[in-house]
Image 1 (cartoon, rainbow, N blue to C red):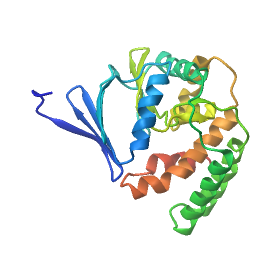
Image 2: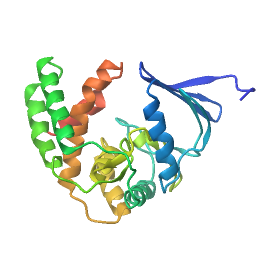
Image 3: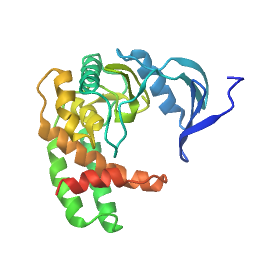
Image 4: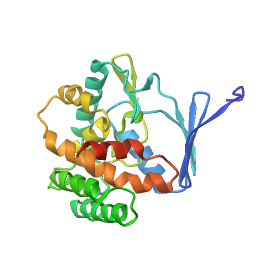
Length: 245
């Protein structure tokens, strides 16, 4: 790293920051618990993850993965159908593994937070009431009991890396824990509905597409306030919500 002349800010807000220095990612997190979860989850995961180079709280150093992210929310993905199917297969491998020992979010917690976010969006005039109401109705299908599996918890398309048709690894495991398998599949395909068939084919078992669509609405409703408060543009999530009308 001594010869590196450039430091790239990958993401930064008041809670955490990720920097790229050459082939090393430096994650700085004010919450040590998130870093603890990330390190332990990567050690348990049966799919490729970044190598932990060193750790000195609050800094975690990870080796860069080969390849590039499968895509970006709000932009068309240039990855092949085979790569998307491989991402579905990787998700299935993860979900078939024993879940982590720490607790996941309960159904009541998910429902309570959703109601709070919907109320905030309407009260503050962030989204039209009819958009919120329609998506809250769609989201209801996700609010059913599920069998907890090992979930990544934030399996968005930018966290899955591919080289050609092969998945080279998955990053950002701080939200990992027992959860709903269909939440991971929904997060992966959020804003990329045209890729859902590829992901499900790679996943290799029948899934409830209505529940995945419900998670699209639910995740987007929950994300808008966080994105605004942390200085990010929520338009991709808003576009998902508007598409439900």
